[in-house]
Image (cartoon, rainbow, N blue to C red; front, side):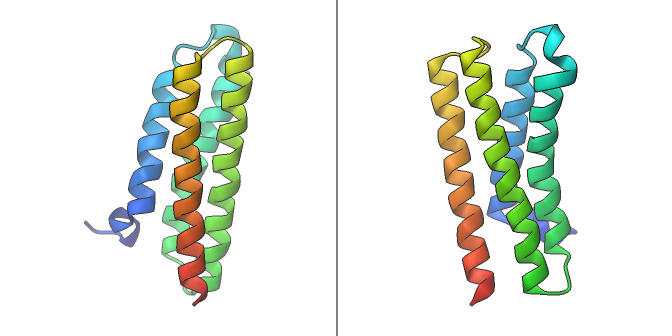
Length: 118
């Protein structure tokens, strides 16, 4: 693996969430193409992109800042899941699975941030 981020478990986990969000959003109504689908996918993309970009930083404080952006994007995805559930685009099981996934990812990101501050 050529880049540091490729070896990070948190990046790998974020890529899994990214894949899941892409798949599930394919089932959203076409009228959501420029709204919820686009916003949710962009937020999921932002998670992995910020981890990757931050990992190439010259300092731990800079990497920590990018991890903060990733956390915010995970929370955005979690909120989008609530919207999708309320609108009937996803069921309870899908929501619970993905919501738990976002919680686990946030914990991993927070743990990495804490480790970088040591």
